[in-house]
Length: 354
Ligand SMILES: [Mg+2]
Image (cartoon, rainbow, N blue to C red):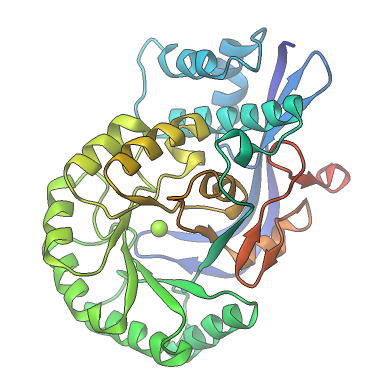
C-alpha cells in the first residue's frame, strides 16, 4: 500500500453562542479541522486535528507521498528531520502531529483494530472531565455556578474552570462559589493558561488549596521550567501541565526539572501518538500519570492505551456543534466509551461536510 495524497480542511461551525476568554486568549468562532491521508488501495486515514493547509498539503505531503503507511516511525522521522531548518515546536510539529494521528487511524483500518489497542490497550472506557468555566463578558459567578451544574446534570463527575484573567482575590471567590455549588464530591480543577509568574502562581495556589483542587493546570509559561519547579515544591496541589510542550525532548526537560505531576501531552500538539508513546515512557519511568489536553476523540485512545492514563478532557459546547459533522464518542456516567471499530472509530458525515 502506498500513500497517494494528503488533504487538510477546516470546517467552519459558525459563531459560538457567547465568545469565551481564558486567562490569555479569546475565541468567538467554532471550527472542526480534518486531516486526511489517501492510499492507492482506497483506505483513507483521518485525524480530527491539524492547522495549516500550507504545511500539510505542501512540504509534509511531499515528504510522504509514495511511502508505505505502515512504516510509521520512518515517516515520523522523515517529517521531523526533512527540513532545511528543522522545527522543535509550534505549527510544524502540530501539522506533523495531525499526519501521524491520521496514519494511526489508517493503520487501524489496515489491521482492523481500534487505535487504543494498537497503542497498547488497557481498557475500553476512560474518565472524562469538562474543560469549561471560561470567562465571558457579563458572566456572573451565578452564571458560572449554573454552567457547572449543567455539566453535572449531563453525568460528568469532574469539571475544570479557568483562572488567571482577573485579580487573584476575585478568582478565589469564583473558585469558592463553584465549590459551594458543586459540593464536595465533584472533582474540581483550575487552569491558569500560563498567566502567572512563579510568585503569583504560588500565592494563588496557597489561597485555593482549601477548596480541594484536584489539579492546578499550567500556572506558568511552558518555557519556565525553573519557576515550575518552585511552584510545584511550594504547593500541595498536583501541578498539571504540558499542553504547550512539544516532543520527547521538551517533556524530558519539563520532567527532569520536577515541574509537573500530571503530564498533559496532547497527541495533536506534541508530535502525534507516535511521540506521545515516547513521552508516556519518560513520564511513567518518573512515576507520573498522563491526562492529555484537548478534545476527547484523540485523547481517549491515548488514555485507554495504558494504566497510567488518568482522564481525558472534553468540551460539551464543541461536542454539540461538532455533531453536525461527526458522531462524537459516547459518554456514559462521565466516562468516554471507546469505539471498537477500526482506527479512531470516527464517524464523519461527509455529506454535511460537503
Ligand atoms: Mg489548559
